[in-house]
Length: 251
Image (cartoon, rainbow, N blue to C red):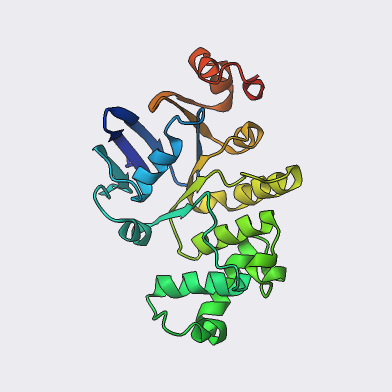
């Protein structure tokens, strides 16, 4: 059997005597959306940090297409194909949507950052940047300053910036936080449209979105992986229901 696109084996993180991520193993295939859910404090964002390299692990390994990334810094992992959208926005508010994505194209190509004017005027950056904006449905807003975008449009722009890095795996940490019903529906359609080009590991509290998107769902509780399966098996899993204290969204 070929290696999964992303393979986590025994990932562990401790802070003193507190085990935040406890021997977690899971996999992600190309074209798959694998959702990671769990109560607040379950260790989900820490696990994403262990994968991306923003958090140092105390055990286990992260492999991308068979290559061991364990111990590599964030920028090396990004170069090898890990892209992440953070909970806190990383876009530059005074720059237009196009300029934000063009900077990401410039970074991927390894060009100098000394003169931002080159980003605004260089077709080698702008042409692909427009393509990534088109991928997320923001082409008509290319020249709008990022600070003027709606919440949903800003999340689309963040995704376009990540796509400009040409990742193989997308790590999405609560991309729907703060989104209204219309923005959520739009983002779900967007992810379903682009999903076949990547593997997507998704942390999300909106269970309706999770059930609409995920091929597989893994559940963390107190740092432990307690279940993995499709939506139907997760809904029916007794330990999962107990971990969520019978929350209505699992009904």
